[in-house]
Structure formats: structure tokens, C-alpha cells
Amino acid sequence: MNGNEFKKVLGERIVALRNSKGLSQERLAECIGINPRSLSDLEAGKSLPSAETFGKLMEVFGLKPYELFSFPDFNNANEIEDEIYKKIASVKGNKELLTKIYMYLISAI
Image (spheres, rainbow, N blue to C red):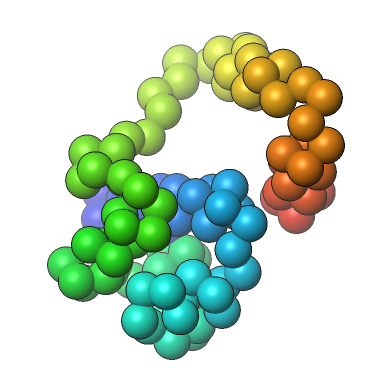
């Protein structure tokens, strides 16, 4: 993975974490002490966060450093589909979480 690919994957990870917490870009930017445009650049894979911002992201998301950089490694589309269905099944009946998943999916597709 080259540097640009890493920035893109990390940006996607930050978006997914932000959405899982139900935070807007503006609110997350406020929580980590950067302006919303800088967060937008991070999420778009245009830049990397400073060490201080990394620390604040881990704090907001309740992650250890290795967890922030833990990206799934799938071999094919079937593995991804299986994992998606497992995650959805794990929140069966939870309207709030299912709504968040739905909103994330429609924004991504």
C-alpha cells in the first residue's frame, strides 16, 4: 500500500468510525480541535492527521492505536458480504442502529 492508498483507507476508516458514533463532521472536528475543512481533507484521503490529532481521534472513538489502524483484509466480495450480513444480524431489532446502518449505506451507494 502506497502513501496515497494509506491516506484514502485511513480517511474511510475515520468516516466509518464517525458515522458509527453518529457524529457530524462539524461535531467531530470540534471534538478533536481542528476545523471542519481539515477533517474533510482527512476523510477524503487528502492529508494525514498530526500526532496530536491521532491521539484525539483515538480518545473520541475509544480506541487503542493499533485499533485505529486495524483494517479488514478480505480476499473476495463474498467474504465482505458475509461480514456485512453478520453485523446486521447482530443488531436485529435495534431500530436506532439499523437506521444508522441504513443511512450510512444510502450515503455510500
